[in-house]
Amino acid sequence: MLRASNTSCNTLQRTATRAHCNTLQRTATRAHCNTLQHTATRAHCNTLQRTATRAHCNALQHERTATRCSTLQHAAAHCSILQHTARYYSTLQFTAIYCNLLQRTATHCSTMQHTATHCNTLQHTATHCNTLQHTATHCNTLQHTAAHCNALQRTAAHCNTLQHTATHCNTSRGIGETEGE
Image (cartoon, rainbow, N blue to C red):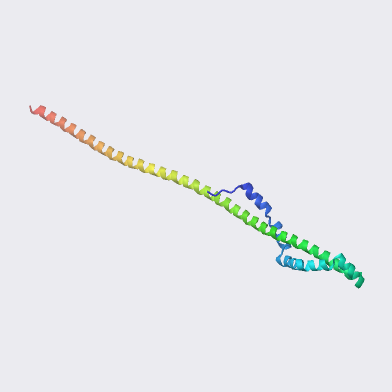
């Protein structure tokens, strides 16, 4: 028999609320995450970070303006932020997938509870049917016995009639024989 724990199902249903899961799914859309992941690729960020190293910037300050170096350092910092954001959105995507799994599990749990309730109802009905069948069999036996009793009563009544007739015959013969002597 299928059994589903009410506590387990209720916990899953609260954890996997539609509002919570829908928020995660909207936040972690594939297009948004893919854009962040593409922008924050290691190759792109590593190039920016190498370009913006202090030694390189110091050399550039002799050859170029300090503004160019600050821009590169800012780009490297921005790249680190993008990498962190991409990891965050990957976590959100995983959480959204987990949330969907919880929703499916909660739905399955509710189905199992419904099936268990239906099963219990069917078992109760089957028990009731077995009782009715037993009662019907007992009734059939009683009807058969009653029919047999009725036949015996008719036979007994016929015997009584025959005995009465025989007694009457014997009495009639005895009266006539006594007169004829």
